[in-house]
Length: 110
Length: 111
Picture 1 (cartoon, rainbow over the protein chains, first blue to last red):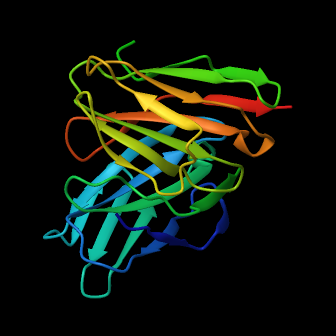
Picture 2 (cartoon, each protein chain N blue to C red):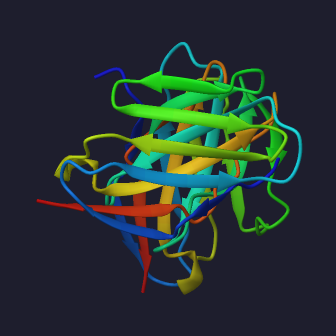
């Protein structure tokens, strides 16, 4: 198992702006997942990108993966107040538990 | 609701008491995970089951913690002789592949 490290730790933007957060990891992976956590709630799975994929889209989310740099980014376009949450990346190998970092706390103000 | 459920949602206990939490996963999921989360931190992995077998346990996990999944369905997490440092949110997740589906958590406060 290995841990992802999210950057920045905190991000504040206005509604309608785009939010970009990054994830770095250290060893080879099978896939990388992004999760969202609203305050005091459980995590919600957002998107999974496999190691042989470079980019993936889901609604207003765009995830990139660069295995040569061992990094990933999550872009949220046209952000809304409801996007306010903590975002975690989880680099994963098959059959192992996920190890989460401290996350990026996103605040979207109207 | 067919999501992951956890009970109780909140538990307040006195130091030294034992507590037990229950997790009911999504019915067709064979994998079940327990995590602990404190304020400002990401979830910390505790242990993992595939069906009824406990396959992985964090080396950081105290011997006071034990988990079971007797019939490969629901799971329980017991903490014996609770300490104030055990105060945290305890999260359960289930999975049938790579994506994990989390429950709402049990918030434990040890006084």
